[in-house]
Length: 303
Image 1 (tube, rainbow, N blue to C red):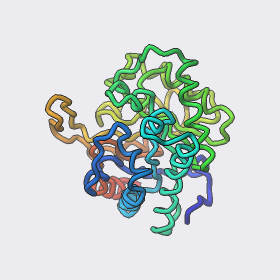
Image 2 (image 1 turned 90 degrees about the vertical axis):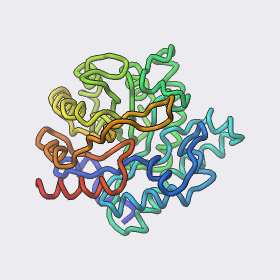
Image 3 (image 1 turned 180 degrees about the vertical axis):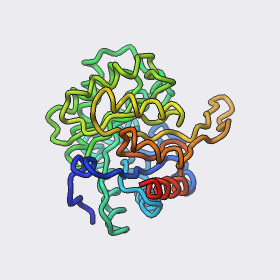
């Protein structure tokens, strides 16, 4: 099936769903060069078949929700690569189409989340892990709104406002999504019990507590141990289903351009998260199809 029989919000009322893993690491495993500033979004133009293949790999691993290859996409970024506005709109739409095509290939019910990454991701300088770009909420809203409108027009099941480093940007993204006609989830990147910009998670999650458009709230692109605590906080503060997809636990050494440390992504431990309110569970950086399979199996065994 390429179109959900139930809305994602309806499914979250009763089910725990498995998200995919890191798109970039799967594309690199397929031999793709992601050194460009557009990162995986470049392949929307230059290698769409690679994106569809990556989505397919995660579906075959057990994922039930796919996140599109639009995380680092922006009209400004595409323009720097010679793509005009109409062409950029087509590429945003293509990100959703490729996920739908992968679902058709596998032939089962799949939900598609249109990825809206933070402003810092578009800068490609790591500032999404710091936040506080020196822009006002209104300026950030103006940046995000065209991206959100272009993605929403392609008809995803939900917009993933993800890897958000601070509450100012969360507020801007939620404002930008008003009237788009598509529900959203809001997912912060965190360190310990605070956003990357240093705000307490209880304050950060509270932004979404009374917003009916937000069908899930949580964290991604963080340490698995930090996600443990965040699941409970998000559920307690908002009363909403929790979305959680941490990294492997390894750390990126920008100077050495290599990953360091040990992996801490433990599917068995993560299988306890539904009891705390998690309903969308997957992986982010360095989590490939094999670990998504292990996660799906652990969640099934714990059910």
